[in-house]
Image (cartoon, rainbow over all chains, first blue to last red):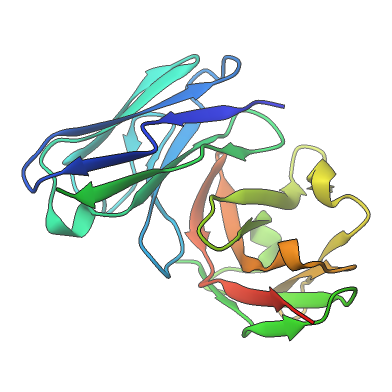
Length: 107
Length: 117
């Protein structure tokens, strides 16, 4: 099974900051990677699919990059509504696997 | 667009079973691939199983093999996830989610299952 490792596990940032979260797969997954945002008490929300494609309705300050084993999610200018936990997920093969999550907190 | 509405919270005793439902609207269940993901309190997301359209089968995570059953009622467009032999570690929010091109694009609101004596 493919394992997904996210870093950091948490990050403190201020409104307007650029934030980068990384995700590493235990083996190559081409561009089969998705990113989700989850706020407390809510279901996850798809942000990015196929490593770099923005889901409809998601603000353009979110972007994804990478292929193979190393991926990044970047928030170009952090907004108050972006404080949440972010998860990556490999979509290359069964079983799907999620990273451990990165909590973006207010500095 | 697809909407998923799940059944309400459950409290179960250890050893019991729970069956969570997920009602689809906007599409028919036959047009979708449904999966189930759970999240223990304060923890991350854990895939439990789901339909693999390439194989035409429902695949379960090894961890839940023998304890979980995922079914669908196409007459009511409702998916079900039943977990048996519950233990305290099964206390979690259970989500249904539709998958397309490997990504979960629509999620249910979640169902809290509490296992406590």
